[in-house]
Image (cartoon, rainbow, N blue to C red):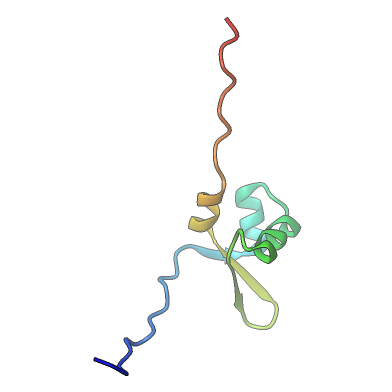
Length: 73
């Protein structure tokens, strides 16, 4: 039908935590997490005037393992 839109449904909350807690969890600095947010690598959520939150599930997805060195023999 033309002109009808589905109601907006917010994404489920996931595991959103303050920046300081996300920094401790990931071993990254708060400053780095803020930079990731500004660059679009990580979604930052505002809760109130000052509080910024990060979804730990999203943070887990951007942290990836480093491949092991190949055997030289």
